[in-house]
Length: 119
Image (tube, rainbow, N blue to C red; front, side, top):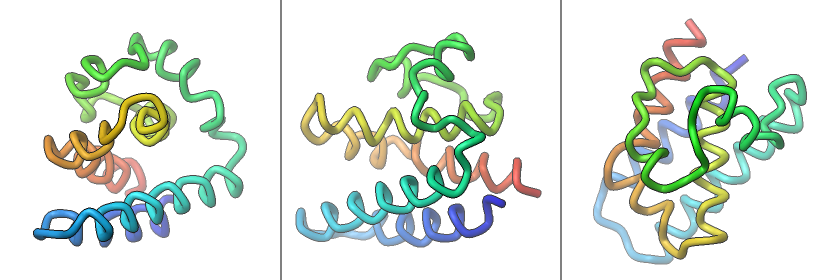
């Protein structure tokens, strides 16, 4: 179920680790969001559109500090997906917040966790 999403996210994350222009970064950001939305449409049972509720059910807040500090290796599938959605939605509230999650490898940690949960 997660193979397609993790493959796309991994490929985009690899590109994001290279030196890139702001335009390239924005393109990656857009593609990641598009893939998450596509996955959400295919799997409504995962309730990705209710990410704040899912975060709260896992004792997390939708805040920059919480999302940066969380140990992704302890999260279940719904919680990892909620975290990713929360990261991408944070960009609407805090400019370039998503970039900080690329820098501290939180997005990569989520991708790695999804791969483990998929196997």
